[in-house]
Length: 131
Image 1 (spheres, one colour):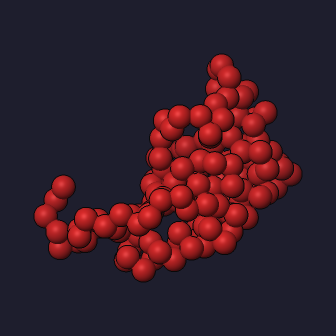
Image 2 (spheres, helix red, strand yellow):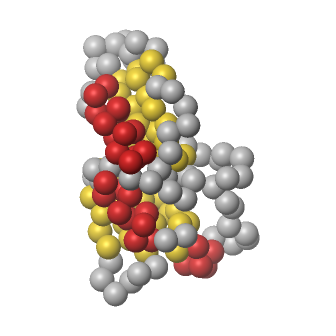
């Protein structure tokens, strides 16, 4: 299993955002400084208040506006789901800054969550030859 730890300014705002785009959120009872977002059976994103995050990671905590180190990407079951998640991200407090990318066998959109972390959502044609 992989756990991705993300520093956020407001755990509740971030948890609400990810619930709006269709991911399961587990708010830990009695712990307002963190929440978990279930991405799949093998992946969980832990939303950590910046102070909690800095206790786990040595050194300064980067700002999401700094040069990108990573784009977290979710899979979709159709092109329509890609567009739906991107639209829900935008209406839920995120921002879509680039147009959809379509190379025929892969269709993707990118959005920023309310804290500025970059996310992708993509559909891959199951009939296309492997990449």
